[in-house]
Each structure stands twice: as structure tokens, then as C-alpha cells.
Image (cartoon, rainbow, N blue to C red; front, side, top):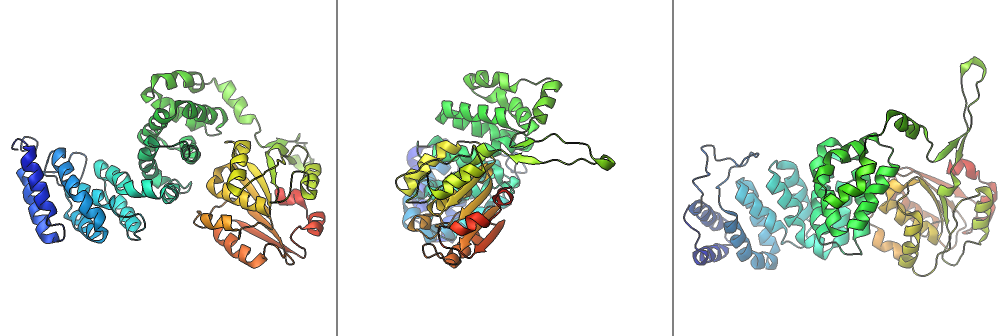
Length: 458
């Protein structure tokens, strides 16, 4: 490999960029340039990147960086050509060409409908760690910065509870956003990763380490609080084991904070913890004839919350009746715009799980959005004539469907929130839905008296 003359390298990269609109010529000159800078002292007979199945030119990173710098502006100005060239670079199959393909994806506007299909297909094809990392970071640069909601929805899809095989993609995609996290999006990131940290299998230990270290660097206090909360409340015995294994890679102050919680517990303590009820109080189980046992379970009313409507309060008729039926349940007051009410709701629910949320009208909209954004915190969702057609909901129409058990009670005579349009949205949004249609108006005054609420909430 010749010594790198930066002036000559810039001229070569600039010349290469001149062929941006001529893919065949571009590839010809790219191969010549990569060969020119081959590091023959590292080149093997097989010429395959270590730990990879990709061929490699063994070109120094500085060469690729200079090529990327020259291509950046022209690629952003001509995204269609950039996408076509990225396809050709990817199909070339070399480590360097695939890294350049990933770079070009990151220059394409996030609105381009062909971007995500490429990303999805390529991440499934590649085994090389460097290329995979580039696809999940560099290729998502513009989406992460220009359309953060779209990016977060993509990460939610990767981190879906039933898609454990894509969790590693979700974690790697999140790392650059965590490094640039603002006060606005960091709580959302913590909510997304909490169930992943708690349930991550041992195969994700390296990714989990990267995630926790990145979170701690951005906000040490919030990350420490999150990990303490998980370790204190988890029902998964492997959570402590996994975190104990990787804790040596944590920053020393974090290791010190978690030391007591990560210590192995005596077997007797573990057994007592397993026997402690969490969300139900189980009555004494009497012995009955034939040796069989029966049990009745009481709901933990402190995990039931009622969200009132737009012009209502915690002293409304439904709120008072619910409070009488289920003593101890939470019936807070909300004021202001939808966004302001959601900010008031978040600290009430915190990071606790197994909530039963009852939302009436505008409160139903609040409950729906919270459940779709934090499905692992909600055990059941009850919606009373939910205002899913209000203008506020338009921004949430791209929410991911959730499997949280959901019951909607709606009146045929509702002249405020029409039944059928709401049902159409609800059937797309909730995969475990029971829709109860009653002969009543928007306030559901008669239905409230007749329905078996213990059974509905059970």
C-alpha cells in the first residue's frame, strides 16, 4: 500500500464523484481506487474480512471517508440516483462497497418509500458486524434527525416483544440517538428499552452492555434509577443474572450503585420473593371435597385508573361511581390540551406495570395513546365512547397495533363520537378487542348501571 497523499486522495475521490451518474464507470474507477490503496501487509490469500463472509480490499478507512465526503452533497441532491448506486454497490458484495452502500442510504430522504424495504432486506442478508452497524446507524442518519417519530416507530417495531430476534437491531439503531438524546426524547427511549433490559436473553449481553453504557453516559441519574427499578421489581429471575454478568463493563459509579441489588440472594429469600403476590391478593384457599381447591382473587384497586373526559373532572358521575365500586382506585383531574394532559398522566403511571386503564371519551383517547406507546405497562384497557376521531388522534394513526386486552363500550345513540368510525380505527389498532354496543348515548348513564364492571375489569 502506498503512503496516503491526502492531496492526491482528494483528487481521486473528487474524480470518482464525477461518475456518480454513470454507475458502470463509477464502479470501474472505484475498484481501481480501492486496489490502489490495498494494504498488502494485511491482505490474505482468501481475502476475506475477519469474522465475515465478505471479500475485502483491505483499504484504509481514511480512503472510504474521503469518498463519502465527496459523495455526500451530490447524493443528497440526487436521492434517486443515490439509491440506484447503493443497490449496485451492495450487489458488488465487498466489505468496502457495502459500507458505501449503507452510507448512501443515510443520504436519502426518510420519506422515500423504498428506503425501509432496502434496510430491512439488507440487515437480514448481512453477517458482517461493521456493515450491520453501518446499516443501523449511518443509513438511518436523516430519519433519526429529520423525522424522529418515524425513527422511534421503526425502533419500536424492532423491539416488539414478540420479535426477539430483531431486538439487537433495535438496540444498535438506538445507540446514535441515545448519544444525541434531548430531554424530550430520552424518557421515550427509557420506556422502550425497559422491557428489553428486563427480558433480554443471554445472547444479547454485548448489545445490552452497549445500551446501558450509552444510557448512563447521557443521563447517569435516570439510568441508575431505571436499573434499580428493574432489579427491584422484576419477576424474571434471569434479569439479575444477566445484569450481574455484564456489570463489570459498567462505569465504576454505576457498579457501586447496583452492587447490593446484584448480589446473589440466599435461596430462602428468593423463594419468599417468588411467593409474594404482585397485582392480586389471593384469599385463603380452603380445602374442599375431593381434595380440589378453589380460590377467589381480588383486584389490586390501586392499579386501576379512571381518565375523565374533556370537560369533566374527577368528581363526575362515572368517576364517583367507579370510586365507590373499586375503593382505592385512582381518579385524577386533568386540564389543558391533549399534550398537557398526557404530561400530567405520565408521572402518575410512572414505570409501574399491570395497570387497568379506564378512559371515557377524551380520556379514552389518552388511554389509547398511552397503551399503544407503553403496552408493557397496561394489563387491560377499558374505553367508554373513546374520542378516537378528534384532531389530536390524527398524529397517532401510525401507532403500532397492540395485543393488550381491550374492551370498548359504545352507545348506538352517541351523537358526540359516532360509533362506526371509532370501531373501524379500533379494530385496526387492537388485536385483542371486545366491542360492546349498548342502547345508550355518549354519557352511557344507563349502561353504567347495567354492566357487570367486576367482570369487565377482571
